Length: 120
Length: 120
DNA sequence: ACAATAACCGAAAAAAGATTCGGCATAAGG
DNA sequence: CCTTATGCCGAATCTTTTTTCGGTTATTGT
Image (cartoon, rainbow over all chains, first blue to last red; front, side):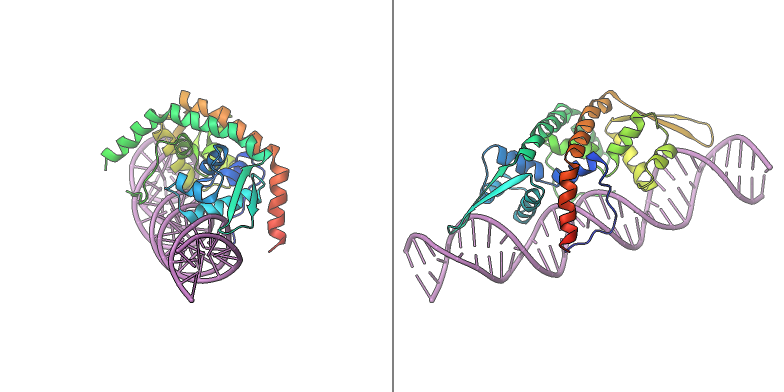
């Protein structure tokens, strides 16, 4: 297994939060599940920019931290369904607030972004 | 200058938010400034785990995105002071909410963390 | 038999992010 | 003069995260 070289600070709430749902697509995955897109295949086509492997890995992590729950029938091809746990649902308001903040300031941010491009 | 290889998705509010204040120590820096620790030297000693260089770089980014403002006298040795802009202040409630969430679930998360350690 | 499918997993490689280390500028104090 | 202090910057290096690619499993339909 991969071994971390630099120590973590588990006493900071923000650090913990970003550890649990701060990966590249974790927020999108939670959003998808919340919208009823609950099977890995469907999540992958819902987030086409994300690599399949990373979605799998992040699902596993979210499961590990008890943010989502897994239900898997033993039929083939396998049909796995994920759902948000209680803890998982408690993240939703945070996500919507972050999304709201980002969108509210998107013009502002994009302007700076373009400035950066122009200077190159 | 550094050139990004993979395209970004600037239409997602969460992505924008984490771009602006998602770096390793940006939240801590904002917290520090909010607490009145406003000079680079002092911020560095307030966050001893962070490398000086990264704090400098993240201050520059926060400044670039208009999250903080800079006031610099031309005395020597230089005395620079940063302050939160209006936009910067609008991030504070988000930070405290994330911190609250993380701390509220810290026992839960640390338990899983230990489980991971034991299995190695 | 054999292709197709869904969910996973392992490992190498690439990309992004963070650290380390040294440098510059400038003025004040010894 | 020489050291000290502060803020900043560049480049090499190292660490972490993400991507890419291929493989496994087990059943269903052809």
